[in-house]
Image 1 (cartoon, helix red, strand yellow):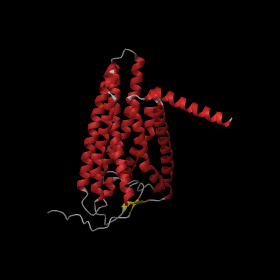
Image 2: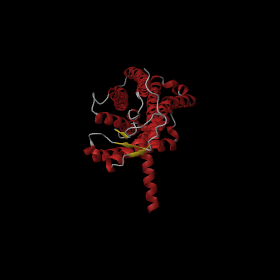
Image 3: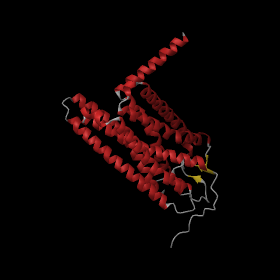
Image 4: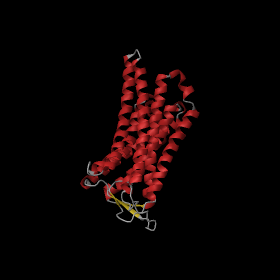
Length: 324
């Protein structure tokens, strides 16, 4: 038999209440301090990268353009969730309006979909730069870069818009307490009076397709990079290339593993993995990459490091001259 249709006469809840991390309330203050520190690093680091790349005409290569966009996406992703998390953990202000909840949900999940596409674009950029250095500028033209950026954005919008629409049209006639520290879509959908299974399936299948295709292509890019690197005669060049690739892969692992683990664990339910572990995984994959990306992709790049230092020295000298 078919289940009952959605009852659209049920009033939309004015407010949801975010629990934070269920079972870890005693650690909320420590988590607030840690998140505040990580958010400050992410905000300052990504802002510096954006300013340096936009101001310096020598940093207009495709790699730095993608890095600038990645920094902007990281700021959006972290800013969508961290301020509210810190508010919950430090002062217990857990209420969030219905509109704010779904706005947060859309920006968080759209930003994560854009970020995985950017990581793929950056891996492709490095692959072309190392494997086809003579054809680099002819392959990665401004038109190709614009096309890649538009395709990444459209893919995120196509995936996220139906998901947000479906969840926002669910009837919420029961509890409005979300057992999470932000408006995670599956946690919100499970509060509905209707069956959330179609939404959960859409989310699981869509996320799996996007992430698995990106990971396969990223892995193929780095395999080609490694083949080219091991063909170099200089051991020093090999070591530098391996060190750079290793740090990139490490950041990607910190992004993809907690993210996909949180999705599959949420699908399996609290009986398989404790709820606080599920929430922690979902939180970490939104906070750790924006904190580490400016360090790994920015400060470890020699050109970026030199430009950042020169910008800081100029700022200090200007300030000194003004004071005197």
